Amino acid sequence: MSQRLVNWFKFASPASFYPLAGKMWPWFAALGTVLAAVGLWISFFVAPTDFQQGEGYRIIFIHVPASWMSMFIYCVMAFWAAIGITFNTRLSGMMSSALAPTGALFAFLSLWTGALWGKPMWGAWWVWDARLTSELILFFLYIGYIALTAAIDDPRRADKAGAIVALVGVVNVPIIYFSVKWWNTLHQGASVSMTKAPTMAATMLWGMLIMALAFWMYSIAIALYRVRAIILERERHTTWVAELPEMQR
Amino acid sequence: MNAFIAIVRRDLLLAARRKSEVFTALFFFMIVVSLFPLGIGPETAMLRRIAPGVLWVAALLAAMLSLNRLFAADHQDGTLEQMSLSPTPLAVLVSGKVLAHWLTSGLPLVLLAPVIGLQFDLSARALGVLMISLLLGTPVLSLIGAIGAALTLGVRGGGVLLSLLVLPLYIPALIFGAGAVEADVAGLGAGGHLSLLGALLALGVFFAPWAATAALRIALE
Image (cartoon, rainbow over all chains, first blue to last red; front, side, top):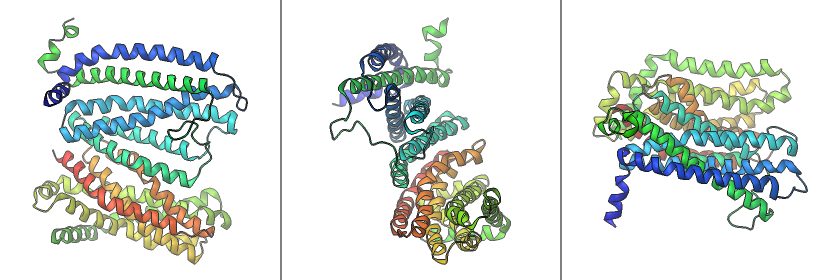
């Protein structure tokens, strides 16, 4: 057991994580591309036309996975923030800041596709509904995190301050969600839930789940790629970076 | 406890010596609120409807104005560092500073709100609910704001950044605070909203000084 713990902490050092991330990200990228191709094929050619919503419903194949990922990435960010504060590891802060732009991107994508879907379905680009509003606030939380870490010059201090913002945010997300929910609700209930059988056709569900997996793989790949860039930038004064083969060229 | 009282007294004394800062935030609140009837039009039915939201949004903005100064002066002259070295836990001292901040920025708004509410033709009953909601809500603003103020201490463009960080976190207080008055006007009773606001306050009192302290320690490194 202790042996395994030691092995895990070995990768908490940027010097040993950098090559590992370099080996891993192409695999996740390839997996993400394949899954996205399959998912898009299912969502455009296999999934039947919805009898109520017509062809427009196909937006959900992007919209729902993007919303899921935007929320999930915030939790992952907060997880790394907590690890970073508890164990005082440098890599955790780098992981958080590598994840933030992807999370913000998905939050934006989810709002954008939601607007495109809302216009034909509800007849409005935007409604002040609980889920839309809390997604918008989540987007603001991402922006706040990115702005704060960008404004602090010392990267270690930026990481720690960002970690507190992420943790305060993750405590607040459920409070914000429920306050907005009681404030106003119009959005259709969740079509997929953990507790009851989904209310959509199996092929649609498969398309959505595969797209969600594709987005997941994309997020991992891009986060690893970005964390490598962050490691290089912050550790550029160290000898191990200078000895890297890509630095020799 | 002595240290807590001492820090509250000290911050109140400092505020009393620099009265203009307190009054600037108050007049800001009054001006922002007065802008809305000018922008929207003076129909009383409409004003009565928007009053709770307008007053609450103005209160959020006024709280933001004074938050910058919560730790800045103490950080500059090194008092904050001495506080972090003192035998009293820093969280206690931070709570004292937050209480003093509320007494100088939140409490005046609570007392001023009924007067401004009259301009919006709110009934006496609605004014009472508005006051209670502000009384419960403005301490939450000071508490959450303290986390933001500690995080942006000595950071470039701290003021704007502070609003970006803190305003999204204020949303629940805004919703329940303004919602309480609206629910009461609609005849639904404000009890539920006020209880939730009280719950937010309890959570804030417990967690916010702790998070603000952690943020201050990072800033002091």
